[in-house]
Image (tube, rainbow, N blue to C red; front, side, top):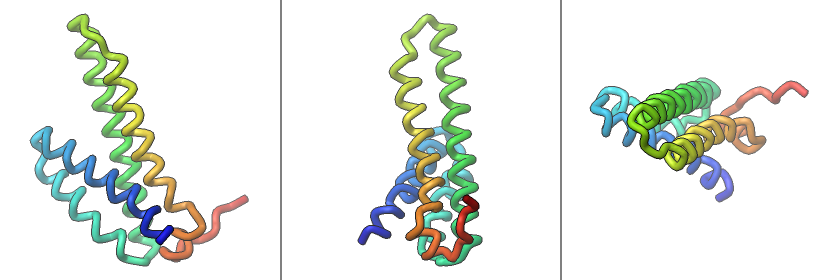
Length: 117
C-alpha cells in the first residue's frame, strides 16, 4: 500500500502537466504526459529514469511558466506574489515526484542501483 501511495506523486504530477499543456493548446505534449502514466506500472530501470527525466523537464516548464506570467503581471502592474507561490509550489511538487524514485522501495521495485554515499 505504501508503494501505491508513493506512486501517486508522479501520477498526479504528470496529470497536472497534461492539464497545463492541454490548457496551453499543446496537445501533443498533453498526450505525451498522459502516455507516460502506464510507465508507472513497468518495473524496469529505464521506465523510472524516463519518468524522472519527464518530471524534471516538467518542473522546468513550471518555472518557465512562472517567470513568464510574473513578468507579464509586473509589466501590467498587477499583483504577482500569490501566482509565484502557487507555481513555485507546483514546480517543487513536480521535483519531489521525480525525487521519490530515489526512495528505497521504489529503487527496489524499478531495479535501480543504490545511490552513492
